[in-house]
Image (tube, rainbow, N blue to C red; front, side, top):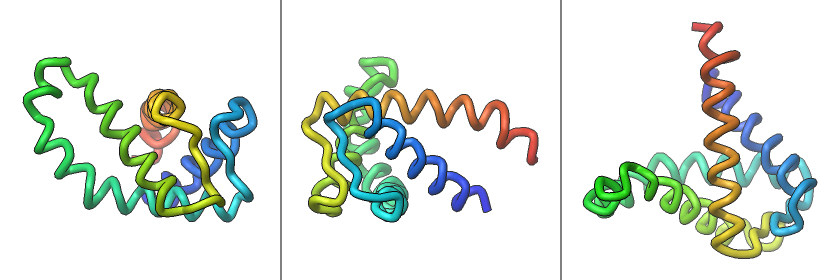
Length: 116
């Protein structure tokens, strides 16, 4: 159940961020949901490998390189989704990754923690 909630939260975040920044374009809410599912699958399969391969630099940057990995998975999602979900560049992907991390952390500490 938490997975579905996470998918929907990320989809709403994609729509909200695309409204504030011109560097992210989402065609529809359905496209945002599909992009969120694709991102979730990439985070389950590709992200652990990227974290493992970049462990030394992640250690040296005290974990800040994880934002770069998150931006890379967002760009992979962009390339898989085609024109329905478009991120203008790496800088915008990094900004989206930071915003998503902050919002997801805040939601986990407040709303989702109360359900457990």
